[in-house]
Image 1 (cartoon, one colour):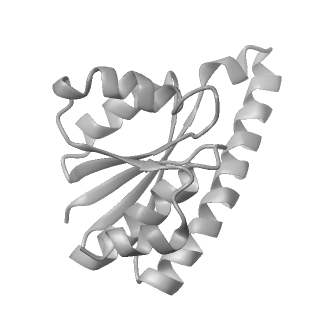
Image 2 (tube, one colour; image 1 turned 90 degrees about the vertical axis):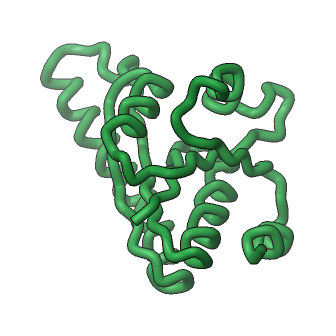
Length: 153
């Protein structure tokens, strides 16, 4: 089964990316894989503290994921898959794409603030010609209604 890969982070624009992926996947009979990446700077402490912080980060990610997963199961009939990786975001994202040949499209949410679309969108769009799969970039301020219209086609 083909999968849409979406990155789950603390940005508000990831909500639109997740919605887009779920709506498109439901429409075409695909799956959704949600990737959350724990950056290495979160664990620059003593080993015991780092292990505790890692466990807390995983719990936070799993709770966040479950909110989206419930919506996908209840509203779209999709059972998303959660993958948690640790490391540099772009490297881990590329590694996940390489590790799972069923991933067919990467869906990212673009920020709308003065800082630009976000670090992942910026870095990956610069090198998009070398990526093994297409990227769909979903505007972070797209309304729910417009998002539903777009995904029906």
